[in-house]
Length: 360
Image 1 (cartoon, one colour):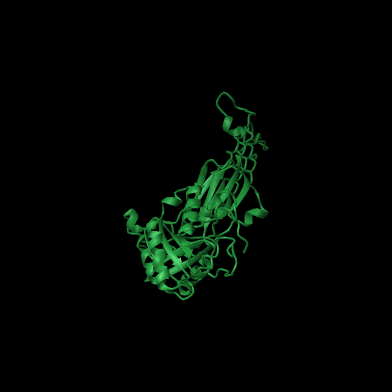
Image 2 (image 1 turned 90 degrees about the vertical axis):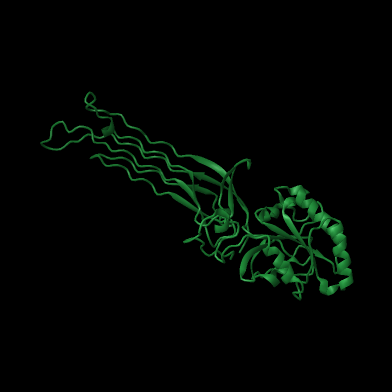
């Protein structure tokens, strides 16, 4: 499946149907009078968040969406039919932005969330509605209100509890494959991951969603490498895991690697540099314990709060890291969505809620 996380589309709601000008003419009935019916309402443009979608690729091939107009009013006091709403399905995590990207119009964070983005025009009045005791034969009518229209941007921010960041070749793909149901591509070259990946992690009876994004390099905020556009997918995460390669095969020492990634997160903004971050020294199976311990001390001296030696290939140290991750996540049932408010947080019982969610 192709991945697309931004799309620009045109939306237009339906115009209202015009009212009718008609007079009742039947044999043996005098003074029939006006009987023109009102026009029907135009269709609304409605966006709804649905499960099972994790890309905006459909909007690459269809950019214009127009709702139908309301039906015409007719004689014999027949009203025009209201048009059906135009319902557009988007993935959970989609934001709707104004054309200049300055305003967030809607933010879909839950399955089934429904927003009427544009309302259809009201139907016009037929001449029967203008009849009064002093105006017995009105010929006025209304043409119906025009629909609304606008260009908007759709921006997808995947819903995940935990984000995985690091330099290229830090072992992020191997790590997410080891701890989750993801099947990310693994290769011995930089930028193996070109698009964000999601995986569901199950640990000690709890479940959370882990997001892996392409590696960051120095200058990513200015467009170096793949850039920082995919950082938007970890904006909603509660905690980040910064994976650092200590095998000696990388070109950057661990302290410099932490500095580079932290600088890019700060340059991106959106609060990423303020998120809780767990530093994981990866590939310890390729380094001795004394070296790993020395690097851990250096990272703590450089500002790291917690450092965990791990190996995505052998699984060593991963359990301790996942235990630490759980301490940052709210308690919730296995069926609650990532990014949603748990029953403990909002004080409700949560009965009757919590439909299953899958990133696939």
